[in-house]
Image (tube, rainbow, N blue to C red):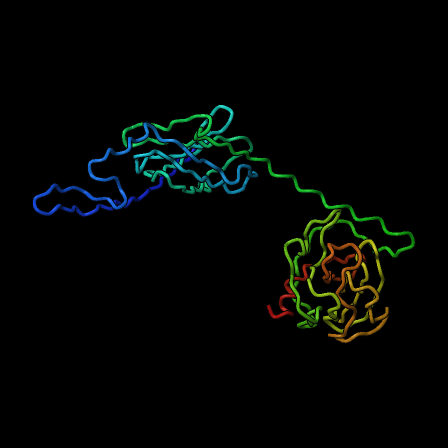
Length: 335
């Protein structure tokens, strides 16, 4: 792994107290508020600095996470500032993979340093090592209590869990026809029937990527678009047409309706609220007429939504194929 080096500049402000003199020709000298009296002995500086604190947060991350922040405090009595840097080493072997130069830092104060995001840590163990040098060239004193070192562990990213297989349909339950996997068909020109009516008559959301047409499923692809909405919201016909099928599939689509539209396409509405379907097979419906209500029946994630499909030629008939309904749904919704 290639090592990275980063520089930080610390700015220190020095406050100089004005000199004060003693009247009538007396001696003059600096006065410090709260300091030692004139003529008293000054404290002897510590011989070497000590890392009173060096703590990564967090100490364990996953590959791809942002590197930890490092909180540190250096102590050296009688010395105001020291030069410091952090080195990250990969174990075993103590191979440097990153450095952060802190410049001059004040002693006795806790500071937090964020390891740069450009430092990509692979799976394994790392040593964070603090290096300090005082103005006289004395380096950090390390001991069992204050070693000036800390460890970071980087774990491998967990493997995604496979989605659970759909349960087998109950004996006697109606089974939807299936078709072999096929190449996704791009959406054709808008319906020859003109602008349609949005199929959910209420507030809605199109959800995340797994709600889209073509998203992966166990053994098949998602052949429609999920429309998230509150349970009980009316589901309406986008065009006039004839209801070709209504049924219930406990392990699958739940309660569903199939509409053959006057524009020559078929429309599939699934996961409807149980016993909310208000049309029957063979019935003629007008555009905007209620078919059922939004629910979460069948095999779903639990969130109430309408699973909506558009098929050219026909629904599960020879030559029929699903198309991406999202472009037309956005147009119908005025998005």
